[in-house]
Length: 435
Image (cartoon, rainbow, N blue to C red; front, side, top):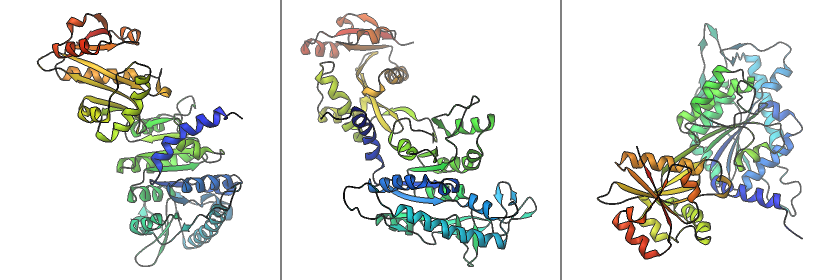
């Protein structure tokens, strides 16, 4: 029986993300609309799977929809905050208790189709949040509506270290023993910041941020997200969570992701595939080129090895890469390395060489090589280089299409000419003049 190609491809795509997220803290924000629906059972299974893969999960739940259903009169709001009187506070506390029990029951089911008995997911809770009153806004007494004062990150970390999922309700208590109703997005952002979380994930009814045509935007910087939200109508869930998402990014959370929690498997697709299903936000651009460092050496070897096997590149040992790591640059997408190139500068010469240009299979044809080349060229210009050489046995057309012209080996700097003569590869030589 042959392996299923789609499964093999999907598992290989997921593997780097599984490795990356192992041991990392992820704050999941589940809106009350998601909790009400039958599909929460499947989502709970996916959350349990994340925990089994070593992801440290803090789950924050909402109660907004439950609260609206239970009240005969509509809630009053000021600046987007619900005005919480004493009677409503009692409803909030009652609903938080009921919702927590339902979540614990769903998460406690384990894996429905497990081939053998699996350990039950351990869930922790507690008074992790101290709160303070929001006070008076625009002349309106917000009463028992509060804001986060402090997160007991040490207590939460102890639970995570014990392999427990931490379940948090959007309420907090003051030092005087008063309970306050808190904003769900702001509570989640405060938790992510206090725990130095890798990701903050909002699961709601909206797939993410859209452009003027209603097309979902997959990856945005914080600045781009704010601009699209200002210029184009967005789903009410996006309007509600975006300010807290941007605050989290500004405070140091690496990624914020907004996804449609009603879509089966959306959480797994968002975390373990290259493009995901929702909108992923970063403080700056998702794609970048940076100088390589020692921890990149395994990635460099993996990038280079297929090209060595096919005879395109010369072999390089780990020691070689360690000795010349300062010459290398790597291209990243969402903090995963998918390309590399080196810039070798020759002493007493206005020339340099671009070498060891390599990209992953799934990045070919998507501009990765151009991104690296442009970065190498700009770096060379800044260093006073006026001629950039490229030596190749199989990719002459690629360099020709990017402004490189055929050159004689005799035009190479003396040091490089000696190497060229000694290795006897008879590579074709190209040169590009840098303006």
